[in-house]
Image (cartoon, rainbow, N blue to C red; front, side, top):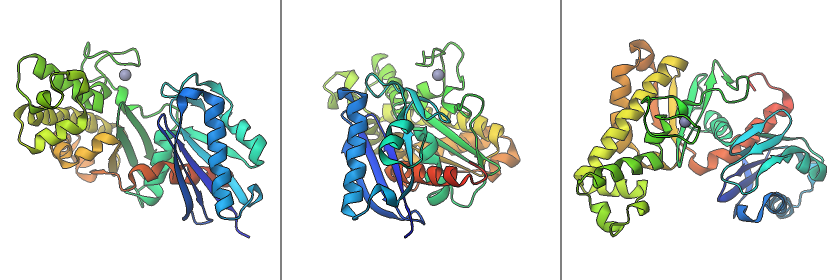
Length: 326
Ligand SMILES: [Zn+2]
């Protein structure tokens, strides 16, 4: 009997997991709250319970599993299978994730950064299919990125290659969680876009979002900015335009660095779609090297939330088979 693959996307809010057949068609999937506040052991047990329930639904046992892949946030030792730190998970430090599951499932378990597992998903089954040079940029609370170059996913000396979100755009600019300041992520993430409109409102610009939050500017969300933009709200239009422009400069740098055929924009802010991407594309077109810029498509992802679990399974399958490029 053909073996199955498990792919899991562990986030601070939800755990998404699925069981895939030999060709990585989804057989069964689950999405459960992480309950991160209850600590690491609780989260691991929840993941294990989810796996058992998926196997049970299909009448399978762990003997039917070839291997498992997990995409995790934060820092990790990919080869040792140890999750070193994740800001979105509570008390999460030096967790031997691979060994914990290998002891119970008796199958190889591979971990990787969640943005990279998303990239594996979009590369093999989504917008990046058929390309050898792909960049994924996820615009959420922060900015994540991962890169495929010449058919290989880049890792680098400490598995942090391609951290586009931390390229410095404005020396001495907004402080960044990484310890630096003026990083791209401080401006084009959801948080960054909200900071921009808040700054405008505080300097006296009128925006309808101010009414929506009844003056409590800490309650503004990126989605509100999109909604206000659609109503023609001038401050929201300006905010979207400025964010798109900064993103465009960031993408021009990305194009010049990696010469991708496609840049895929994912994450929550990607829901702004063309409101943001039109300006970003125009700016990148003006400032990237001409031939490289003309070759590069800038688009949103196709798989959305689904990319992480299938990507984790793709990653694990190829890691098991030691396929070149992984
Ligand atoms: Zn930074």
